[in-house]
Length: 460
Ligand SMILES: [Zn+2]
Image (cartoon, rainbow, N blue to C red; front, top):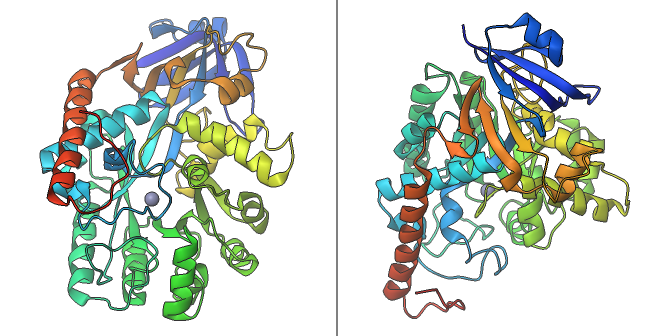
């Protein structure tokens, strides 16, 4: 049995009392937290432990990202600034124009960014995850893999939110089969048990009632959650009214898709009755405040919380920076509440740790630094110009913290990032190759479709 003690440090526990321990130590035996308390006592309890000096540092529970699309970092610098759905009309997605090996490198880049910004658990939502699941396993991080299904028949230039008028049994069966295979291989399928799966339907408009039922059944069979992008644009709401005569969340309600297994993502444009439906069914919400703010929206999170929903936090496309997510979540919720005091930084940190863990059904194991829980955490250097004086480290970090403050990340009792260096990933090579892949594929797209309007001048 291996034992590690992080000593002489500040520990932000995110326990129910939101305890912050000072001059404290945390003992980790194998993959779980054994004890927390005053440094001398903990050191006396475990004299042979590997000692990590935490002086001038603070230990936080790992952040939990409920909604990521790792390889959408290919759109970085391009899709952030042109609305949603974006005004680009290319008949191909650049993600479909790179090889499986290149897709794996882009996903590895996303994993590096996730880790460097404090995430220990990430929900990866995509099609074809089997191509890079082995790489994700090797990172040592905790993943929830959500293989997206869809059965809408759409043209190549389809943009999210547009109406869909036909569904295909073949598409349904093919994507269901792919999702089932991922479950069978990866759901509690590794020795370390850091990987699980959840069901996923892409968009309300591209999912037939028949597929909704099938994914719900798949999730029940494996006792998992399922997710869907929900009420994410005005266009989607208009399309659902046109297609089914009801709004998106109402459509899911009529198809028995709301409830405690649901992780509804985005929920930006909701009617009061949809908020009531989500709350009454105890549906979980994945809130991506930074992506929402980029798209000029603040979702009605306070109303959803008051209605009874559990709220977790996520990133979405382009970036996996959960430090930015926490700060934007604080700012935008204060704006929508017209309240300069609420939420408090501790509320936001709790949403991003215990809130996300609860939304994913993982709160017994992760989300706080408490005895018996899995040791998922990150360590920041507090002796930074942006963080001192450290009178209240949670507030200092949420308001002013930088990803670069994060020195080490531990998942399941093992470091994946230690003193700024990745133990399982070749960061320099991945960044260099990802830059090349991203530059090359966009140039290829523009050469292939020279007549599609594109307002950006790419760097050489
Ligand atoms: Zn998404």
